[in-house]
Amino acid sequence: MPKTIGSTNKQNEDTPVELQEMINAINSLPARYRDAVAPALDRVVECSTRRRRILNLVQEALSQLRLDMKYLIFDLEATRRERDSYREQLEERGQG
Image (tube, rainbow, N blue to C red; front, top):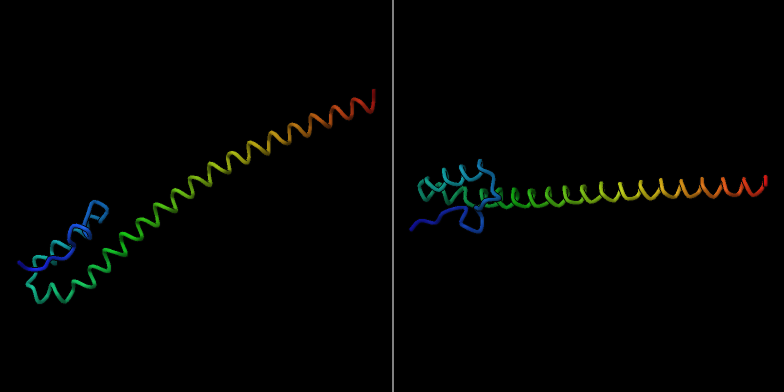
């Protein structure tokens, strides 16, 4: 049986459709041509998978950063309200 590119651990649901089509097209080539491009295609699939993972990590980090910023803004506003309240109390005591 001829060697195929993009075996189950390389080609999965995370692989973009375009790359899956390319893998299938290259797998249909004669063995001598397929063997010539196999290493390059495997590297492309690995890079694509790695980039997708990195992109997902970056998106998750940005989501967490947005949430953290909302909490910080809420905390800052609460601190400012407390400060203003204490200032008013000090001014009332000073005048009273």
